[in-house]
Amino acid sequence: MKYMLMIQGTQGDYDAMTGTSAPGAPAWTKEDLQAMVGFMRKLNEDLGASGELVDGQGLTAPSDGGLVTADEDGRPVVSKNGYGVEQPVIVGYWVLECRDFDRAAEIAARIHQCPVPEGSTNPPVIVRPIGEEPPVD
Image (cartoon, rainbow, N blue to C red; front, side, top):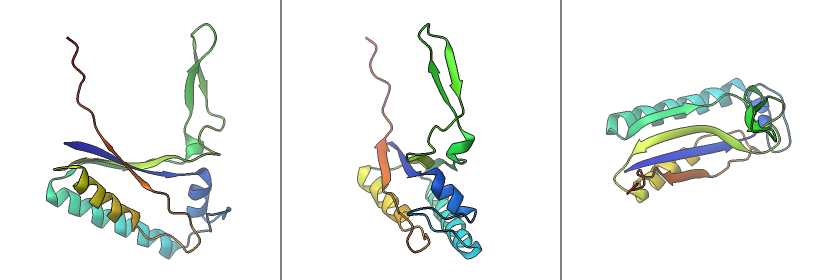
């Protein structure tokens, strides 16, 4: 079965990684970044070697993204002013092919051990089964 594992963060977390601290997000050092990247590379190598990794990506800062909604006439409205800057959003994900939820949760627990600077928030890792196509009959 396939599972999506997701991690959340805020714009403040991205700012901290570039050296600007915020509440709950102290500035990262070069060593902090190297530790995180090394951890993620090893994780992805291990998941690839086990045959469980389907895909995994880190996403750019929320300030780089946008939001598409519709106006009262149903026409698309594209906004790039602030979506995800104030609240936590998905900042990275893995799509895994695992034997069961317990195995996906085991991998999520490993992800949660990723090193972060002291004083940083460490949000939970979200584990969601990827649903099968519903019957259309």
